[in-house]
Structures are given as structure tokens and as C-alpha cells.
Image 1 (cartoon, rainbow, N blue to C red):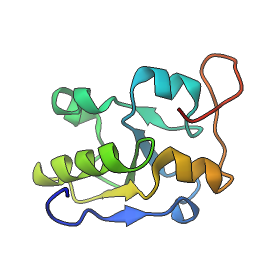
Image 2 (cartoon, rainbow, N blue to C red):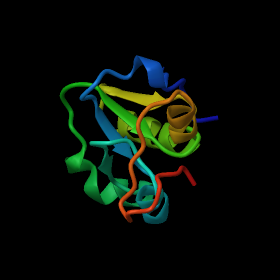
Image 3 (cartoon, one colour):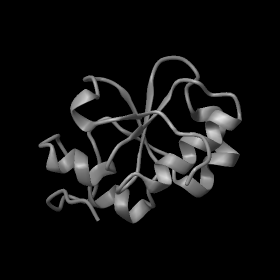
Amino acid sequence: MFGPQVPSITPDQVEPGAYLLDVREPDEWTAGHAPGAHHLPMMEVPARMAEVPTEGEVVVVCRAGGRSGQVVAYLMNNGWDNLRNLDGGMQAWAAAGRDVVSENGQPARVI
């Protein structure tokens, strides 16, 4: 679906303090995201690639894993070799009992 198989990681394999790159839309981010994640909407990635670390593992996340898989493939085609797609996205993250926080003071949720 995304060309070559993209490397993936499950929510329980993500180490504390890992660099999480959330590529969802602003409303999705505001409703709920992983604590400490970095927000870079998918459509802005080509113009803002320099913001994505090239050292250390970067875990890319969206709602279910599709958009983040596309971002991982895109960045890998542009020279990154330190990326992992979060298998199942924020839905799997929340289902695994990992923390989710909101930006709007409302209870955090994955939309």
C-alpha cells in the first residue's frame, strides 16, 4: 500500500521519552495526543522536513496508522532512516492505556 514495508512499532514498545511526531490535523491534535508529542500536520511535512530529527528513533503517529505510514515512507525516500510508524495510531495508543492529553481543557479523546 505504501510501497516498501515501513518499519513499525506497537504502543507498548514505545520507550518513555521517545520522539513522537503526530501528523494529524489540528482539531485531532487539540482533542487528544500523547504527552510530549510534537505536532506537524501531514500536509506540512514537505515544507517542514528540517524539523524532523535525523538522529534517534522518531515514532510517527496519526489516528489509525495510515497517514503516518505515508509520512514514514515519504521521509525514508528523502533520506531518513530512524523512523517507525505507530501501529494502530492514537487509537491503539489510547486502547493500550497510554496517556492522552488535550490542548483545550476538555477530557482528552482520539478523534
